[in-house]
Length: 218
Image 1 (cartoon, helix red, strand yellow):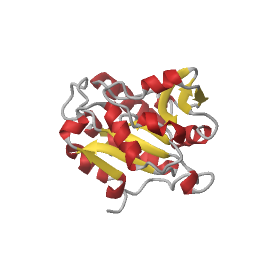
Image 2 (image 1 turned 120 degrees about the horizontal axis):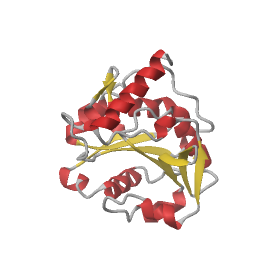
Image 3 (image 1 turned 90 degrees about the vertical axis):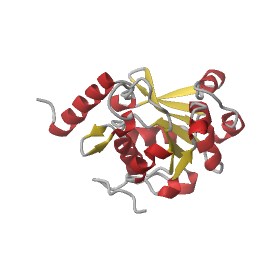
Image 4 (image 1 turned 90 degrees about the horizontal axis):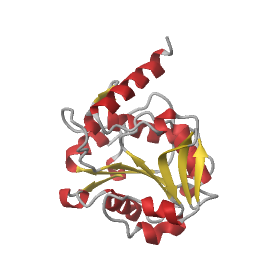
């Protein structure tokens, strides 16, 4: 399947593709806090969807990528990403929580020089933010995007953490690794690194910011 065309060419990454960490997009959750119609990742945003907008930012970053999702969301992901870069979990696997989704993605790209974890509901995150975290990961075991001192996404893990990533389970995700290892906050000028879509109100805020970014401030 040919990837969905982007409005701009991918940003040229520094170094060889094989030296870059893989960006794992998590899109296997149920989104239970979202009370709108359908799944939050399929909610319309601009000419696409919440998930589609997140994925286009990843494609534009030029980083290797992998989407971890479920069958109901496969078509949405495949509009942007080649099928070879999508892992589809069964419903029972997805129900095991974010930790299991991260583990599945890391296992699928076990030879990578690290992994960045990005929830699929951050449609305003900038490609430059993803690259900044990827670059910092060569110097630190754990890196996260930071906006004016606030922790955001993605979160990156160096390859030496592979054994512990393979033990993740449940909805805690990789939180315990952030508590166990030295963590570096990579400061970025990107409010989109903080703006996830958990609720209908979140979606309204994201849509407003999306529109403002395209028409400019009044």
